[in-house]
Image 1 (cartoon, one colour):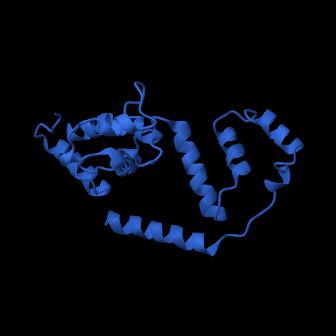
Image 2 (cartoon, helix red, strand yellow; image 1 turned 60 degrees about the vertical axis):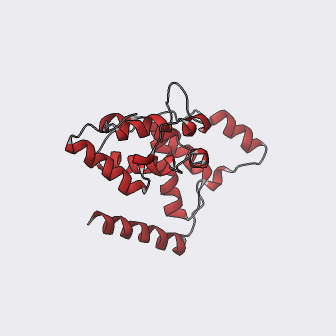
Image 3 (tube, one colour; image 1 turned 45 degrees about the vertical axis):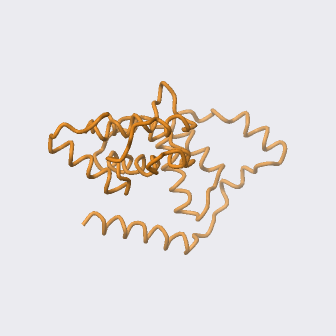
Length: 191
């Protein structure tokens, strides 16, 4: 079983992940049920068990650069099957926050870009504007014509309208309040 060696920096990293995720990782049995039930676990990506083992071993850089937590779909299979009820999604979220604060580059920049654009759309319009999201993503990913064929077929069928991109939306005051509260909570937790 993996455990920290006693180096203070290893213990600080473990404590930070436990605090942010609210998951007692020291209870982890390393049984592998989380990885066995994870829909995105693979030989290339690894699984929740590996990420938790890296945290328990104090392997900060390996845990922060592990691509597993970028692929997590928050399905809940890990916590459902875990005999000690560790929610690997919460651990993944904590690692994502720590990596962003420490400027660790995303191991999957495309996923990170899509995530940022999604949140930006919801924050600005109160909902997701799919066409604008895909267009923005393709431009920023330097693939501006990637989905052009699909878009033209959808326009021909009347499923999407290019005018949707031009139409403005009013800001939703409820969404503004929600994001203001999130920012306030972040500031308070940083203090």
